[in-house]
Amino acid sequence: MEVGTSHQGHRPEGEGSRAWFSRARAWAARPLVATGLVFGLIACGELPQPPLVVGLNTWVGYDPLVLARDRGLADAQQVKVVELISSAEALRHLRNGLLDAAGLTMDEALRLVDSGFDVRIIAVLDTSAGADVVVAAPRIRNLQALRGERIAVEDATVGTLMLERLLRKARLQREDVTVVRMDATQHLTALQSERVAAAVSYAPMDGPIQAQGYRAIFDSRQLPGEIVDVLVVRADVLRQRPQAVDALLRAWAAGLDAMQQDPAGAAASLAPGADLSPAQYQAVQRGLRHYTPAQSQDLLIGEEPLLAQQGKDMALLLQELGLLRAAPDWATLIDAGPAMRVSTSPPSP
Image 1: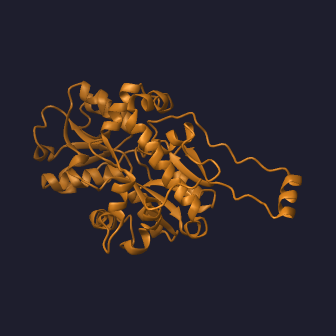
Image 2: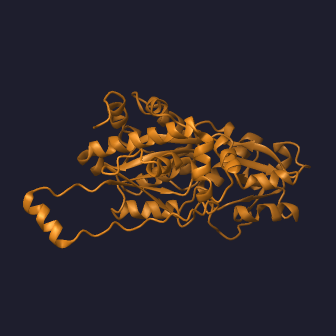
């Protein structure tokens, strides 16, 4: 197996990032409050609670929260949505106490908990429904034809998961192919030079590749429920600030509703920050499936939540790959309480 240079990539782990979105929006540090004002508020017993800070890496699956912030649909006194350059940064800030919540991929959440950090999954945000794809040269007519070939894969967990599922579907072993680690921006050149015969790609990076005659032979629609993004909240915040957590879920619901009611308008406002045209942005969104609050809640409830059932295979694969030490305690990790509370109570005035 050939292992190339590790680069930043889609749904990253460690220091990687979803580098194909270069939003210019930066996370500004929270302003310091004047000392005199702080002392005055303390004296009056009126020190306000800062908003719950939720961090998102630059991935369109999280954009309903960005839209809710930008359109004033989120309660700014309760929730502050900040964008970070990578999920690695989000994970660091969670561990350092600078974030109260974050959008993460399921594998990132599992590995975070496995490292001993206490968070809860309170919502399922989206799933890849074709956005992750394996493209191949025209001569590769079926999955079995990949035997003996070289496949380009980014050094990221989702790329590794896609590759493993592809090989199992093709009834091939890892030894039957040569894995070439490279950034997704290099995939088209590698295919054209015949350095590789196939590549594990994702939207919108796969668009130019397929436009050159390379075709999709496998995609995430064949992995229902495996490649998902979830909303996690620190366990202490969940206990101490339930109203802010509820406001966070309401912000997601409001942003998602606005996006679904006016997809063209949402694309027009969000696409420039994603370095895409509105048409490209909508094409990327078509490869995702966002979960409404009701759909998310259905995945979280029950003695054995559906999310846990769907996540078992991923957790097992992560263990086999040495990326997870033990199976997660799903009963502790998943908390449907906030979703159920929000679904049965009116918004706070």
